[in-house]
Image (cartoon, rainbow, N blue to C red; front, side):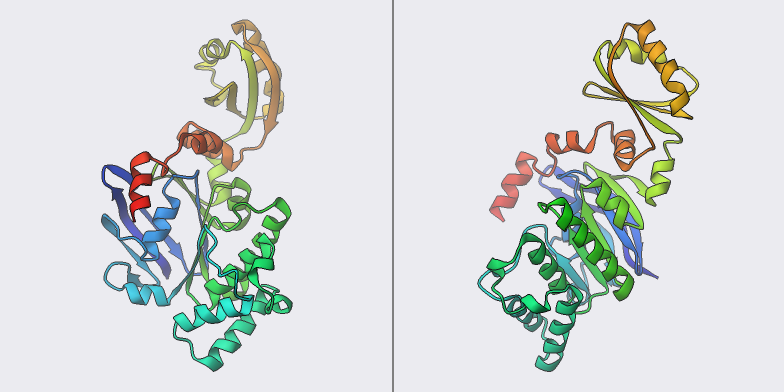
Length: 330
């Protein structure tokens, strides 16, 4: 059974299309990732599925309920951890959870039991009576995850759950998310622009770019689409000449150009490096460095979009001026 069904979902802000006719399904107990740069449409999708935004067109069901006609039922069956902090720093950890539980109409006895349960789960029991303003960034994120669990959701939305955290704290949050999925059997929708986060956590990944899903599958399946090793050349000069030189070379499967780099997908890459160096010499190209690695999600993103995720971050997206102005007015 599917926890989420999405068909041709679209969201427009005036003339700007933030989400462009996407379709996908999420199974019960699955960790499903939206991987893409800021502005790709990830948060807008989450906001529609959690009933915070109305779709322009298309349809979606969450926990078996239509997001337009059964909004209250959807909200009763989901938890959400927003990208931006949403805790009251002047309350303790336990008080934040109690306030949230009261908003969901959970009775006192059940409320106190649930608060103790989620605090134990995210290992904050000994910090429950401390003001949140004294929490570290990782503790705050864990408390927000606990708050998302307070009403025992069937679906949990995590919007950039480790954004701004250091590498060690990020890894700890990953472990809590894994534990949550295994022990609670809750379906999780995760948005991220961290490649390693999506690779580590997700059963399946949708790569999104400019509001569209450009690739969808299990992490290894996506990496296997490239069909070989990736040789990365950093070139000081002659990149265009080298591209022309290698066009039609049968053992070079794909060629991707970005900034001063060329990424070549080949079989048995370690044996092909001398051949590529020879081709570069014949083309008059000057190589600064050569790298070899197995395909990564970054390579997959580059393959389907023509840019690295860092280049996409720099180019904007949901930061489109019209979108930004509209959202400031809301």
